[in-house]
Image (tube, rainbow over all chains, first blue to last red):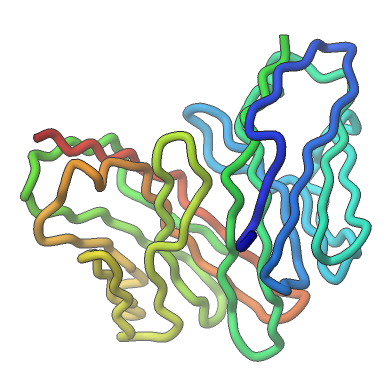
Length: 115
Length: 114
């Protein structure tokens, strides 16, 4: 496997369910990100992990809980979601370098539907 | 703070037409600039990038030149194909190391008809 892999690709869950999204990167990167992409809205950065430490949480509701056990894996734990949380959730990774600005590499996303 | 502004969409073109998608940015330092493309049902893929003023990024027939004087990074292609139909995002990355921050524009949908 190469690049950034997200599972599952599609998820339908009820508002009382608990589920987790998984992301794995095989690029040797040291930073990972969760983004939310809703229809007709700009891409929203949710969480940032640099060197396994969470460095950014952009006012995300507590029903979304990230976990980064190591630099290759990132999870997004979901519980008691609302229908408006239905969206495409994108994971990305990058290599943070002291000298240059770097780009992010994205997974294919998990299409989440909350019913 | 940093920001990226893209022209309003959607854009619909006929096959083989010339494409320009405008992008301007605001940054305090010396950002790197990127264009990402998102095909239906997929994540974002890096299309091209430029890391300093006057650099030209190019890939798959697409080009964009980093213009510091106009703070722009417009995307162009001489002859679009149906397979170019996708959403295009302009982005910038400023800062290095743990201070690195990636900022995206709103994205624009391109539809190319046969």
